[in-house]
Amino acid sequence: FASDPSYDVRAAALAALVRADPAGAHAVIAEGLSTPSYRDAIQSAALRAIFGVNDTTFIPKIDSMVADQQLPLHLLAALGAKGNTHALDLLAGHLNDPRRAVRQWTLQAYQFTLAGQDKALAVSRLSTEVAGIRYDDTKSAAQDLLKELQK
Image (cartoon, rainbow, N blue to C red; front, top):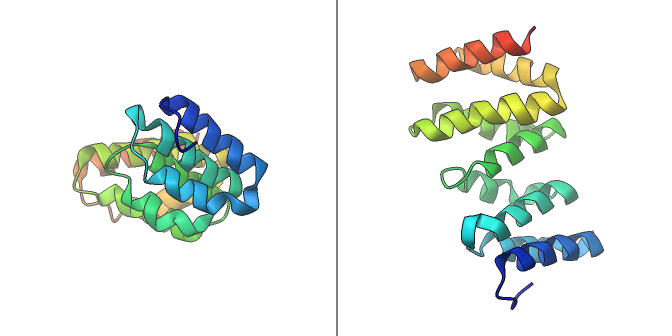
């Protein structure tokens, strides 16, 4: 994991290390999250590993990564579907992110990840949040998504 020149090999090694020793995965995941790589291959492997071991101690770090890539928002949604309300609260907060791309990614996380795992939860949470959305484009998109999910 630490020395191979290939980012893809390092990402695969991270995943293998976590599978081999889930109890000791925290340190490997932490290193992976702080390792930049082409197309975020290593960070993405670390984010997927967080879901695999359900290590919610990384939620603040996951939340800090949402401006850089889409996967952290999907991970917040996935952890929320596993019952973590803090992850869902953070996800909802990004519906009012000043960056349009983050707001769009957030709606995609509701649609594809949260609704994909627990449609009723996605509808319930989004219904609660839609009134507080400050950006008209996002509010309209959230209302459209709610209609689609309620079919």
